Picture 1: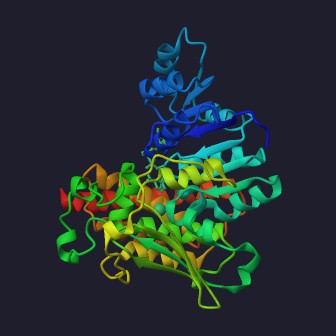
Picture 2: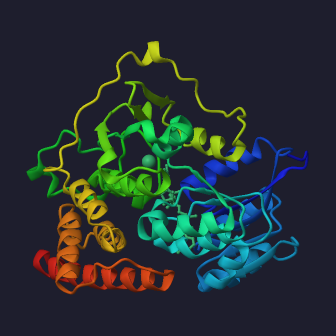
Length: 396
Ligand code: NAD
Ligand code: MG
């Protein structure tokens, strides 16, 4: 590799993963050069980051935020643009690493565009793998792009998965913190308010993934994500609840060896792993001190109380369009819960109803193209919204 700095694009720069990425980049200005930043609509925050990191261009996906971005960057020489097409244009600017850290299936188009350039793409945006995993991985293979998993569990597994011994892999285990309601009775979860669900015990993350962690849909999405990232079948995947979030993922081999990656619950470790891969470099993450932590505990997941996990497992096994529909229904349900329009347990109920309805409508078909994914996604959102309206009326 040459000595010039690595050119980095951060999609979702103003979010939790985006900011953690820029924190690492800001500490190593001789190693990294930011060549583009994108966000949804927070023009002021994006402009500030673009100035701080001397990014030559910045894009907001929401066209309504375009004027504010242009004004905030006027006189700086930083190019400002807005809209979904501009977001895709940014994703294909020559770069050594694109960090895909948009939240939700909205990140799919720019992520695929980046992959098609054949560069290295560090994917945090798990929804794009859940909604279109087969197509995304196919595009990567065709373009010769390297996909690096940012999600902590998948990054852990990536570090301990021996490609040369893939046939000896018996099981891939994702750890789950269990979220804020790990020990709650299901009856008590019915009345959970957004602020309670937004208090994650170990990780500080964006709102959508924090709610997904509380329902454990996050772990469900991660099972589907792992299925696409690693050469394993659905029956080789499992989840173990580990409330301390120190062991992030494990791979069990046929000789009885189980390789795990451990680290403090700080996303800057997996992000640093991706930014510096295949080598390693320092990060500001607190040193792991096992003697101080003392106890690591593990327990089986409870899919009766955390129905989302069961729904995601079923969608993974069902395959075809089921994960796309699951993801779409979950995205609208989480948004409705955050707006207090439905209750916490209405999230799994909505997803379940949408998948049932899709079966009846013969919609659970393998998406053969990104247009098919978009159509399935739209169906899932529409069916989900109708279900949400019905539930919201009942609550009113
Ligand atoms: P976040 O909500 O903090 O940030 C999301 C970012 O995406 C913001 O910059 C936002 O402006 C941008 N964005 C949202 N919608 C957009 C759109 N339609 N078009 C363009 N940009 C848009 O979310 P986060 O916690 O940083 O998570 C980002 C992704 O990483 C998610 O897919 C999440 O599941 C995944 N992830 C996050 C963590 C974590 O610790 N935060 C861990 C593992 C995986
Ligand atoms: Mg994770």
